[in-house]
Image (spheres, rainbow, N blue to C red):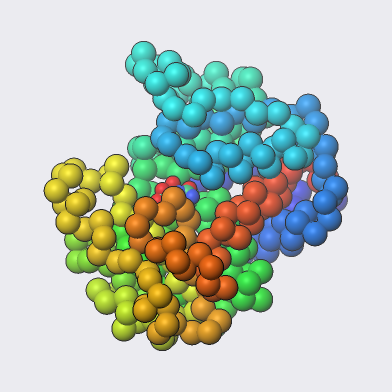
Length: 312
Ligand code: NCD
């Protein structure tokens, strides 16, 4: 029996749904897939993935579809709710019941916090949360952790700086909570006061004695940081456009700021980037966000093969 057979039939709503050991095994499998072109090719032949995207997406949807197609499976679904019966008022529960009767797994992105958890209650097949509002985005976290592991060697003894919209950024919430489970991780949360990390996460860290600080200045923090996680200000979650316009360009990572960074710094960004990393940084060897997007496809291949049970 394969070590990852424990994931067969399981849903993924937030990163804590998997043990650290299961995540490690997924990373090893993703690495094997990356290195051996034909490994697991066609292992999912005959399996169907329903991709239900109630919110825009480029990388997450395309990398899931590419992952499934590379495994020999097939995908169907919708890329925006306007083309589904959600626009006629159908409930999420009913949409999920239908999709579960057609597909072997459901990948869903939804603007409502808690939508993925709700979907698991109505689905007879595993549900993978591809982002639920400002809450969680566990497969981005698998992507981020795999990238850190591959580029840094391991996920411990590092200082991780999170910068930008820490209030609404679901990728930040999921990654910070996941990193808190590893050894000797220091976290620096850099944001304007209006966009600080939600209280519930900070309280959780305080209870667990996780080391973290909150700051407003990126430049001064640069020399301490090993992994810098830049994020976009989440326009779609603002109540007021004026606030968005005032805050959107608070941080722009440029050559001057990078000059203060460590030689082995790794710059990550879940993407899409708007203005928070100048394009001149793309050529800096420390910029890892495009490599990160590629690791996302390999880890999603590992995840799909595991939950669909084709490894056993
Ligand atoms: C992120 C998301 O959707 O939360 N994108 C992604 O999945 N890579 C980040 C963002 O939209 O800012």
